[in-house]
Length: 148
Image (cartoon, rainbow, N blue to C red; front, side, top):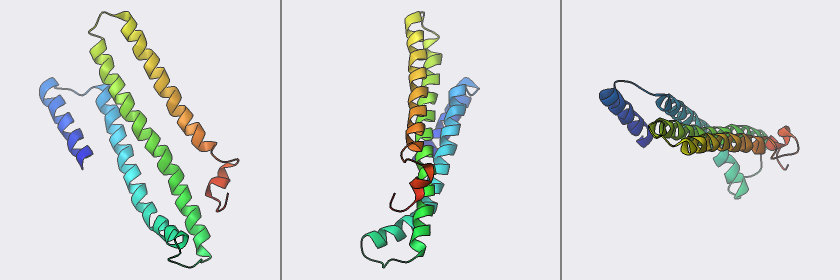
């Protein structure tokens, strides 16, 4: 709710004061859309997670369908992690684009080069996060296999 209110307020102020939206606004819209998708996936995953946690804590006996529950839970968890990184890095990109507009008013060329360095570092770390998620198991199918 806070995210939505903040985004709508930002849009209103930008349109009211500047009479236009900038590229950092559109990247932020993407971040909000990804955030909503992340929240929806969390809500979808909760029943599976609670069912598995009931078994793990001894509140429920083992049932053969628990293996399918774990498989489904981990598939959603895999997507949730990727969306989490995407939300964080689109917000970072939005901030970087905002600061780029601020820096264009400055005559310092070194500061502008530093901006490009930070942008490259941001992109590389995002790719590194995604690669590390895909490489977290020997094989990708092991990520959803109970016991591996």
